[in-house]
Image 1 (cartoon, rainbow, N blue to C red):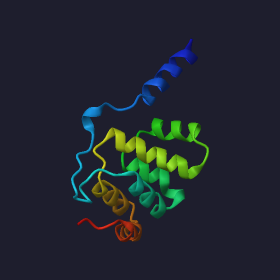
Image 2: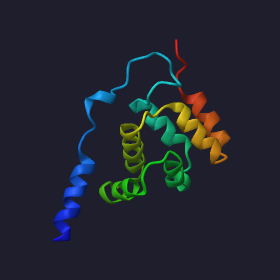
Image 3: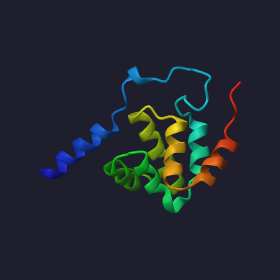
Image 4: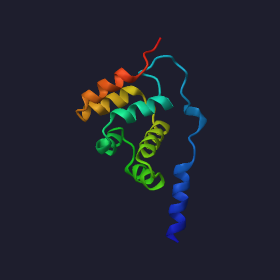
Length: 121
């Protein structure tokens, strides 16, 4: 029945992305793809109550947002998982993150994020 079908759809969503789109290890910080430590830097500056709005600005699908909310208990882990999924689906760069924050009129958050990131060599 329908339960089986939705289970298959979830399994499809859980499949890991292919190896093709792996980030090249370029030293350039802002244009480079996000790393794990940067995900936490982003989580730390975005207000929790505006997190879902932020993920929508980054164009993570509503279905993904809802799935993560169902699967993951703790809010910080949800935030990490949503960001991770966004990274897997797009060429996620810090520029995208800054642009989303500025569109949300969170320039102060964008500035705090810039301060918290390690500067490239």
